[in-house]
Length: 207
Image (cartoon, rainbow, N blue to C red):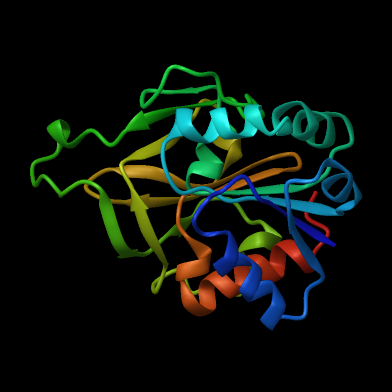
């Protein structure tokens, strides 16, 4: 059973619909009991860092997720801002993140680029796999994924980086630290590649 954490993020129903089409058992909920029964968790994310952390605190989910992820070692997949709040902190806000991975969230620095791209980084982009992981099985790296973001996770441990993407400069587009997975792109908007991400996460022993 996949537990999709419902804290009001806008992409939750798209993620749930993909799981429904794939016949993957799932529940879309903010209920502590239902989330505690899940074998794996998905932490969606659309919006700002502090806003997302505030919603999770107000729903009492911060403490619950720490228990499930850190102590019970439940695999969890963070999407976009859901990935970023797994880090220590963000330049975008003032609140602490979960700190499940040794990373900080930084703004894409267009001042260092000879050809300055627009922000946010919007649209399709390829990925370069840096470390093999079952969550990236059957991915077409050239087609890549759909991105929409201005900030990115800067991992302090290169061993945590699964893939990078170039948007004038290289940034981490997916990572793994033990049972913690994050993707900066939006699988729910990435057609067949995105479907494979959710299928791989649900069906594989990843840790």
